[in-house]
Length: 142
Image 1 (cartoon, rainbow, N blue to C red):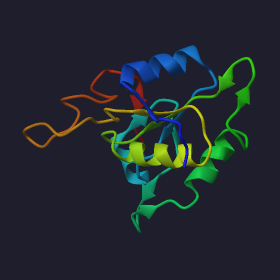
Image 2: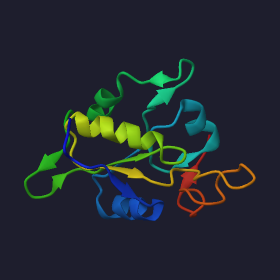
Image 3: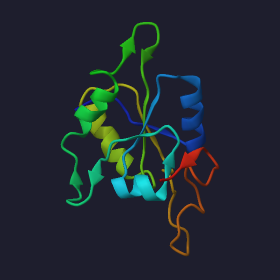
Image 4: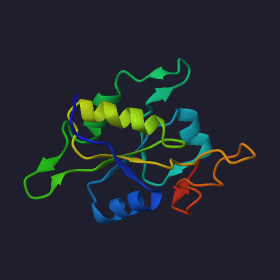
């Protein structure tokens, strides 16, 4: 187990980190259907944590993230490690996925606490209380 702590970011903080550090990798960990049809942050890489049709944890998740980072955590003496920023729908799955990355030896792992769509409102709708899209950050859909 890692003694590193998963760091929370608001959508705005994540966007700023991406602007400030070109090595940052924004990973959308939602299912393929969510990524394609609900939309996703512009520039996000899709690596599902749990995906259809089985809805089980992706056994290759950590390996796929390592591949994104050229086999490691892209750490240098001068600049430290490249930030890995995870986003899901509302910030719950990204907590689990982030802990798995920390346990696998990653150092700078962040998760967007509001996710892409935020929590449900009193009418059971998303994107009205928070999330990447709610805050008007760049996104697209297929």
